[in-house]
Amino acid sequence: MDSVRYDREPATSRVPLALKILIAGGFGAGKTTLVSALSEVRPLQTEEVLTGAGLDTDDVSGVEQKSTTTVAMDFGRITINDDLQVYLFGTPGQDRFWFLWDELAFGALGAVVLADTRRLADCFPSIDYFEQRGIPFVVGVNCFEGSRRFGLEAVRDALDLDPDVPLVLCDARDRQSGKLVLISLVEHVARQRGEPVPVG
Image 1 (cartoon, rainbow, N blue to C red):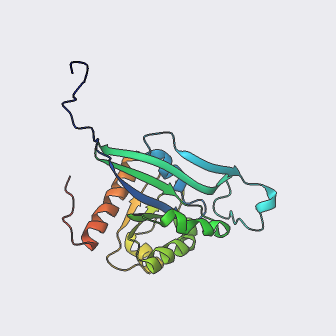
Image 2 (image 1 turned 135 degrees about the vertical axis):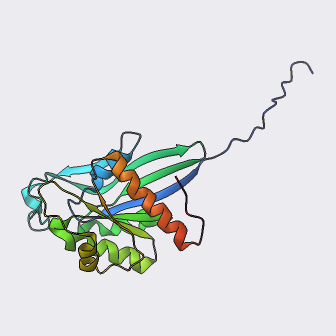
């Protein structure tokens, strides 16, 4: 019997709770940049170089400097604590990749829709998608250098957003700015579910 070892700790280990958040928006709105800024690990990216073959399908007006595009998804991770992890899934922006969206959206807590005021209409399909499926979302207005600034209410009116949909300014390159957008989403989801809104 001396050779039998009895562990004092239970054999079971806790599995962290995982929350899934989508990062959506139009072509060139900053989805890959936001996932990269937020992820604590090197993000998985499916970027491909834009070529002349895509000129008929990829409208680069307003984002002429863009040289790559996401063709499947971006993926990143944030560890909140030992019991909670957040997984970020960046969606492809072009219409021809929309067949991937239903798979990416399955089980999502909610979504961030990035808006680029230079191409504001590009985020309408994302907004429509989440509205039709009842997926909570917030809109982050990505402030690009050199782009014209608009007040939040003007953007809200242009996007015809419901009054309860949060609309925030952000810089997709900045980790802290991105965190504030995610916090806005989590608070929005909590309010919709009638749960206490996290503080701090």
